[in-house]
Image (cartoon, rainbow over the protein chains, first blue to last red):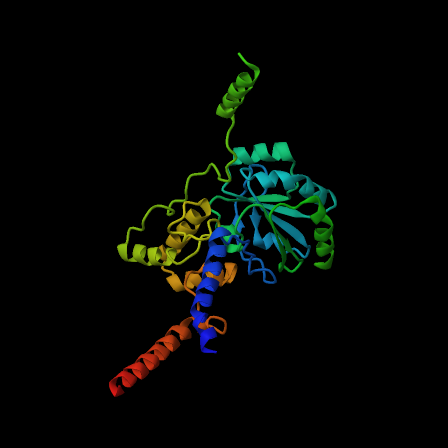
Length: 175
Length: 141
């Protein structure tokens, strides 16, 4: 028994070494989901991100209809990748509202001209304040909000073609 | 010129004109991202809070240390709110409500984290017990 116990400190040391080494070799980097899923949309009011298109406020969103709130930016590359899927959803009649993070109207106009405009309104969020209020940690992210204004789901990253059916059925459930 | 050299030079030339893909906007930093508050006491409160709020983009850093744009926007948000008279712990709670305990470098004392606080005390007691036992034995010998 005593002989075995002698090896215990070395065993513990090696265990710690392995734990720390794996932590160092593959640093932790994870997506942080918003804690607001299941809670009401936080109140906000944003001016228009694009001239000639309405801005966005949380009051307008509580209109009894499930919708998507897309957090995006013209400088965001994956946002270009998800544009066709957003257009497809908009064509299917899904109300999509945009929140443009740290964007300039002229850049946004170019982005919309190139990638299409699935948005009913675009709120400009020049200092990420609404993004932070939403618990969002990057672009693109899409929040699915039900008719009562409760956030039902958060999609982190670009919406890929295979994500569209799931979003459509979740929108149906949120009615 | 040899073929491979020509293509190499062409590729090098092409690189000169390509722009790197940056995940950053073209907007300047928010007002209070890198600007201190006029009131030193308030700036100190903001600074202490910023050092214990984790950056969401570069996850090992606090927002005080991070150069990420979002960290700058979070610093601006904290300074603006402290300027408006909000308490630092209220701002921390507001952020935790959105991002979870993860966003704070100051772990709360709750069901899950109590061993973190209790174990050091326990180990200290254990250490004192072992040492005092040994000292007694030595005195006897």
